[in-house]
Image 1 (spheres, rainbow, N blue to C red):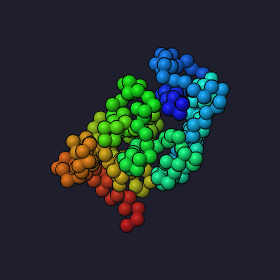
Image 2: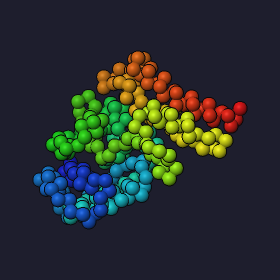
Image 3: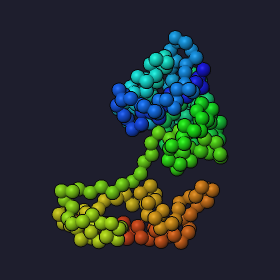
Image 4: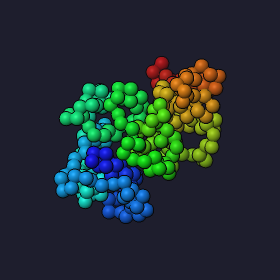
Length: 253
């Protein structure tokens, strides 16, 4: 029964999408999931506990939508926010009384949890064709040693944002043009900076590294920091970082 409950919950999560309104018709997406859904517990209410470390307002919105869709199947979803979620899962991952039924978290801890034996393959509760229309890279991120453990709900990416009220001229089409704009439109004395980026983290530098054909670590777990492409990318990125630092140091010589 538990597998069928989780199957219903996971498929319902997919129909919610990007926090779509609870009252919207799911259309063909609902039809794709009904044949694998159901609660064998009859009239008994089944509660599914999900741990997360996200924004509680967002999680509550997801819970409200999910519980509306699951009401007829006597399933109730409860999200619990946990500080230090990785540590909590390491302590209680296999504890039926105190641990979660599921968790919503970044995929980068997947290998640790899988090696600990606290995860069940997601394909135990849903078929692989459920993920057929998803972006392949998001599905691959939940795969560890040829076993699919995670179902992707959303993914993050960096983007370039600019203030239309302050921007002068055309928006650059290349990073070289962006650099020239940064130099020309930064006024240290006025406290005005044309470009702000956190250059000290791999997360923010990765687009530059990938753009040069380099990589931090590949799918075979081989590091790529010593490749020429990665070195070239870091040197290029340092041009932005050094320029911003030099401009800032003028304020505090």
